[in-house]
Structure formats: C-alpha cells, structure tokens
Image 1 (tube, rainbow, N blue to C red):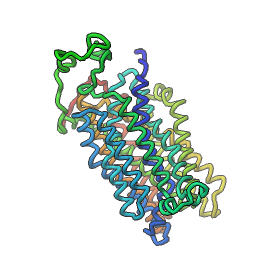
Image 2: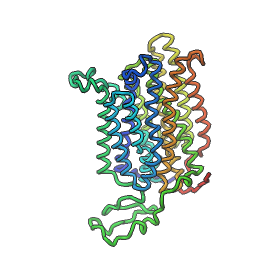
Image 3: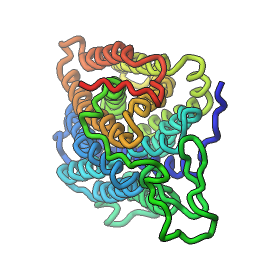
Image 4: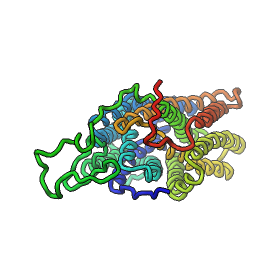
Length: 475
C-alpha cells in the first residue's frame, strides 16, 4: 500500500480560505431572499408566487456563470490560476455591494447576474488543488473543498438572517436613515469584506500552481517527474540572465488542449454525473428556504438557524467520517449513496406538509422530520467529495486541467441555472393546483430526476481512472 504523502498545508490553506468566500456570498441571501421579494412588491402580497421570483434570482447567478466559467477556465490555462482567482474574488466584492444597495428587482437581478459572470473560481480552485497534490493525498485534499462550503454555509445564513434589517433588530447601533433604506446591506457588506480579505491574502501568499506558469522563486524547488529538482544555483543567488529557459527544465510547453480533444468518454461521463448531482442539489437548496418561509412561516432568523445547523452538521460529519467511509465503501458507492439521500430528502417534504396541514402549526414530528433532512445533508454532500476526483482524473493532460474543470463547471452551472427556477416554479404551481397529485407534483418531479441520477451513476467506474491512463475516446 502506497503511503499517503503529507498535504502542502500552506498553499492548500490559502486556497481553502479563498474558496470560502463563494459559499458565504451564495448563501448569505438565502434567509432573506423571500422577504426581499415580498418587500419589492413583486407578488402583490401573494406568498404562493414568491417561489417564482426567488427561483429567478438564484438561477440567474448560475446562468451567467455557465456562460463565462469555461472561458475563465481556459484563460487560467493560458495566464495561470492565481490572476483569475483574484479577478473572481474582486467580482464577488462588487456584486455583493451592489446587491445590498439594490432597491428594485431589476437591480437585484443585475447584481446576481454580475456575480455569476465574474465568478470563475469554482473550477479553477479544483484545478489548483489537483496541481499541488498527488495520487496519494488527492482524495483527502478534495474532501476539504466541500468542507469549506459547509463552513461558509454554516455562518453565512446566520449572518443573513440576524443582520438583515439592522435598524429594527439592532437599533442601538444602526437606527439611521441609511440602514433603514438599505436593510440588507449589512450582511452583504460583511460578505464583500470577507471576499476582499481573501483576495488580499491570495495576492500575497498564494503561489502559482499551473505547471507552465509556476513562479521560479529563489531557493525553491519544483517537482519534476516525481523528484525535486533545484531550479537556482543556490538560495539567495540572483536570477542569472543566462539561466536555462523553462522548456529545458520541464520539457516542451504544450498549448492548451482544444475543445474537441477535451471531449473524451471519461470527461463526458464524469461531467454528466457532476451535472446531475448539481441539479438535484441546487433544487433542494432553492426549495428548502422557500418551503420554510411559505409553508411553515419561518422567519429569516429561524431559516438562518436551520441552514446554519445543516452546514455545521455537514462539516463535523465530513471531518470525522468521510475518509473512513471512502476507504470502506469505495468511490462510486459513496457517490450513489449521496444521490440516494437526495431522494430521501425530497420524500420528507410532503410528510411535513401533511403534518402542518393537519395541525396548523409546527409540531414535534415536523421538527423531527426537519432534523432528518439535516442528517441526510452530509451524506448527500459526500457525493461532491468524490465526483471531483472523477473530473480531475478525466482530464486528458495537465495543461487541459483548467479547461476540463471549466467544462464540468459550465454543465454544473447550467444545471444550477435550471434547478432553482424550475423547482420553485413547480412548488408554486403545485400550491396553486392541489387537484394534481394532491399538490405534491413538485416532489414527484424531483424524485424522478433523482432516480435518473442514480441510474446515471452506474456509468462511472468503481474508482477514478488512473491519472496516466489515456483513454481518449473522442466523439
């Protein structure tokens, strides 16, 4: 058995901190987005129509992301990972400030669309993590990517729920005209400030990870063909004007792989499963806050607590159990188990609705069913830990890693653009038409999609393809 090498914690920590900015920016709006739509008078007081507009806002982020994320990935193959990561964080700062200052629905829409267009970090971060690890520690490194999402999604909903409307909730500090006119600017500005902090941290501490553009620092080593090769004559010696070019050290620098060469069977199979996972996941994420706000009449702060608890439980379970479960069950089995957990979560919603309709208030049984959704969440999220391994292994070459993750993220973004609008619209339609399947049509639809995803997971191998396997079956 090959011994696992230690993780490069300095660079991995910087990447993980930079990655945390995205879930904070994405989930900080979840507790108050339904209330924001109502306050913008888009539904004329009809709570059943809130889902349409909430889904539109959440879908636009991923729609514009889908249009640009592949281009960001290909750009990172050309100029390096670091500059594109910093651009993405700067985009989050601008978009969150804009969202917090928006007073119209059009302003909200433009702000979220801007966030998606400028955010190319998701796939690039995965590429960077893959480039600083090897086959012995890659699975453990990738398991931390969802973990930082759980960390961000633990605290961001609490921030969004408790710090919205600060003039009313914290009048001793924020009872001024500005905060009354901009009731959601405080949580959005905190999210923007964190993204700004991460961009500054990355600018100073992150080293380039792309093998072609990696900076050759004095006295530093670069891993070449499995061995450490000294790049400079000695530490502290100035760079020589007669130093050998990079090509002589790492071999010929290959141009980025074109799109046609990326269309291998391995890439397409891994991307298909990543897209289906993203679809069922975003449908659950989009539906839950709307369900809590409209069906159970939870307040923004209560929704924040619920979502924050889910993030906390996710993080604890991932830290304690994931690596052991991965070794025990295997990669594909973990993925299939997670997809199956989504089906179980969707089945819980109609049970909650029946209980609330019967008693007219939140009963202990409803709290128990909500707790079941919380407990299923870490099982669902383990699917992300392992699908990243398949996408990483499917890349035809190291120089195509950014583009491969870009394609995967494009498909995932399209799925996430379709998911919120479709799920919340189906939820609103089901509420209007109780004569169709008892008003539970949305859950039948989501359950069917999840079952299809379970069958699709059989197309991936039991374990990711070896990194040196060149099974480039082109279409």
